[in-house]
Image 1: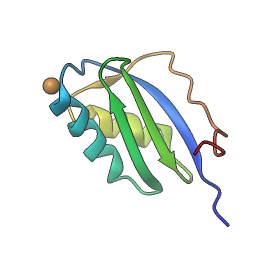
Image 2: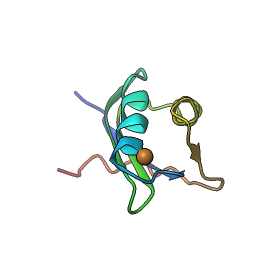
Image 3: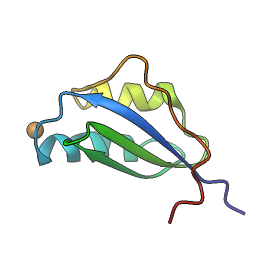
Length: 82
Ligand SMILES: [Cu+2]
C-alpha cells in the first residue's frame, strides 16, 4: 500500500550535531515526509516519505539556516532499502 521513496540532497554548512538535528526537524515537519536524516560528515540529507516535494525540502533546509547545494539530483525509487 505504501509508495515510499527516498531522496537524497546535498546540504551545505552543517558542522555539528545541532546542525543535523535542525535540518532534520524542519524537514520532518513537511507533508509526506516520514523521516529525515542529516549527516554532517557527508553533507547529505536523506528524506524518506511519499510525494516528497523538492522545493519544500529546499525551503525547509533554508528555514533551518542551511542551503541545498546547486545541482543536487534527488534520487527516487530507493524504496527497497531496509
Ligand atoms: Cu552546528
